[in-house]
Every structure is written in structure tokens, then in C-alpha cells.
Image (tube, rainbow, N blue to C red; front, side, top):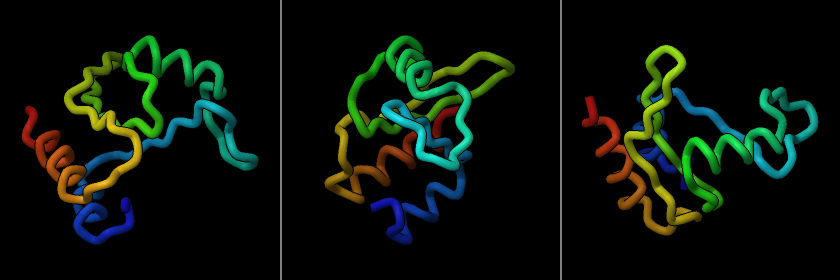
Length: 91
């Protein structure tokens, strides 16, 4: 779904980060490790759904969640595009 042109075009307007929580694939550099990433996701983002897509606004060391797609797998590219478009409108 993420490779569809309409979604790819929208994602280019974001800085994307992938956070591995079960295991970090060999050859991938991730700080924090998988266990710390799980703690971050549950404590800071308040969600256990996987996959979980969230748009964060970063100001200094402060993260503010401005949008989330917590339905797990993406079934509808239109719905996911709506989520991304709404996140782009937040100032």
C-alpha cells in the first residue's frame, strides 16, 4: 500500500522513521533497542496496535502527536491518504 504513487507522493512531505519493537533486523542501526522502542511506543504514544502509524510534531526535545492511524494494516489507500492529508493541515 505504501508504494502506491498517491501514498508515496504524500509520504514525501514527511520525514519517515521506522521503529522496530519486536526485533531490530540485522544490519539495521536503531537506538533505542527493540525493548526500549516498545516502552517508548506504549508510554509516549499510548498505543499497542501494530502496525501503528503516527505523525509527530517535533519541537526541540518535545514530541506532539498530531495524527494517528491505529487500524493496523492499511485496507483502504483512500482512508490512509485522508489520514496523511489531515496531518499535513495541522500547524
